[in-house]
Length: 336
Image 1 (cartoon, rainbow, N blue to C red):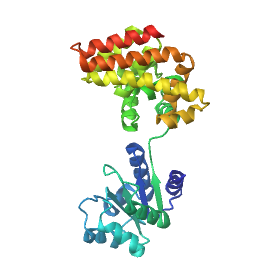
Image 2 (tube, one colour; image 1 turned 180 degrees about the vertical axis):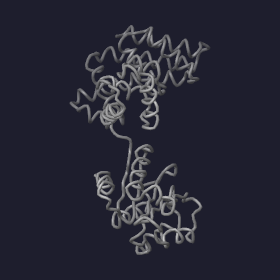
Image 3 (tube, rainbow, N blue to C red; image 1 turned 120 degrees about the horizontal axis):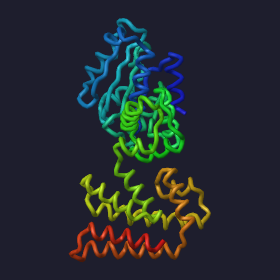
Image 4 (cartoon, rainbow, N blue to C red; image 1 turned 180 degrees about the horizontal axis):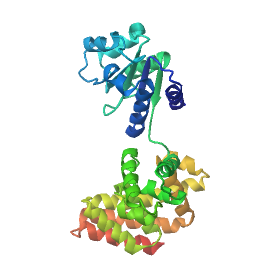
């Protein structure tokens, strides 16, 4: 809800004394920070009344200099402090003397690479101060369905079409990093400048697939009984310099996840509950449920036994890890 308040402030040009912006989605955080600045002042005014500084070595004297001077051109002066440590005396100064901020000053404390521990008393004090005197906003990576909608919307703005199912495939293929997603979409837009419609083949041809995406594809290939595709994906993972043991663990974890999903389904858990219990996103949870519903417990136990044997072999034989992986894939598929 706090993001909506931030959107309202930007659209209504009604700005608060302080904004605390945290969260793991860098693209959206930067998007809203830029929107806030552009709503508050023009490009010309920005040269006089916008300050962005690192908080790590910021002294209280420098902070006073920034906050005690009035805007020269814009109605408000915007001060952005990036990665201000929770141990900084500036935070204690702010929380103990809230009147230190003038009405003509808008302060943004912006979490970037310095991730705040929200369990600490220092953060809780800062958060409470921001909520009382302004707004505290956490901007995390959106849910997969929201990323799908954003993908469709972004491409549409650039006069390029994509179906909902293909957009889902794109989101699964590319790491859930909106900067990376934007870069991949820009590549697709440029490539399809004439035809203006994105297909799965275009995504496979141009997109830089994440390890998670390839792992997901590997799991699908195994449970679809497609040995050739599974073998090809393993080859590509190895070409990415992926350590073979990681590939082996990926297969073992995928089988274990389906087993756990099957158990939770029998306990009448919903797909959403399963996602929460297994700490995975809703879309993979749904796919796991689809797989688990169509495999007997006996077959899953046999696949799990194959994984255990492969794990033992990887630690006690001279057989190469690559051969153990290919044998495990073949054995798992034979049990389906």
